[in-house]
Length: 238
View 1 (cartoon, one colour):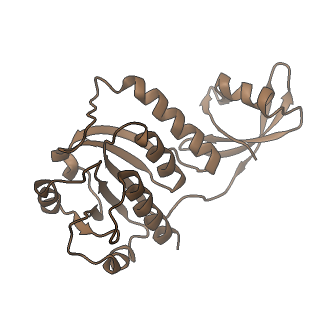
View 2 (cartoon, one colour):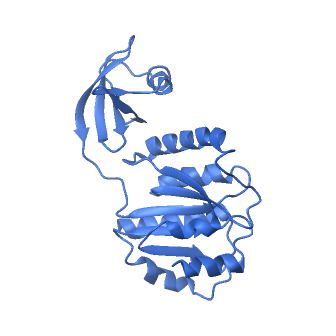
View 3 (spheres, one colour):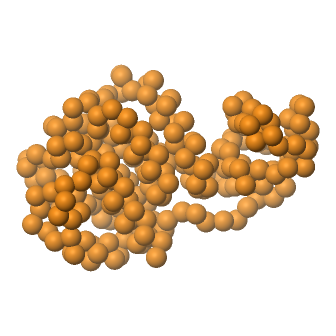
């Protein structure tokens, strides 16, 4: 069933004009058809169309379901080049991440700050909305901040991980670190193209991050995100 994200005003569910257009013109729904509406922090509601021409609908019932992982996943992502960030945001939603914090690290080719991200946030939030609706989540991923690498320690977590291609850790030790992440807050910081400097890895470790290996091959930045988020999702759902 098609899902949309709405909001409540004066005890009524409000949908965006684009969503109404999608329901009527793209999905070609008619009187009596059903769709879901996610109200962030309130739940998911089954709705039924009462009138197509003036587009009126009513709530049938609240839906009890759970498509979320058991825990809280925060991805601290060092900003990559081009449209890779769009891709990672979309896949982070699908893989159950709760929050993305954008990080300016020493090897970021592309730098962002709060003064030059406003236009990009419109696109990022549209990606989050569409991915949330597609995979039927009950939460909306938060894109909360842009920070310098020196600020990664301010986000508290039960487990902190930093994938590092030069680590002496074995990939086989990773399962031991992830066995007990269910129900916990996990921070994972992933580098941009070129990875991390030795100073950054040392700084991360001083702030409680543990080095992990993602295998013998050097992965692209966006692939590293998908790899570790997939593992976290698996261990938090299992």
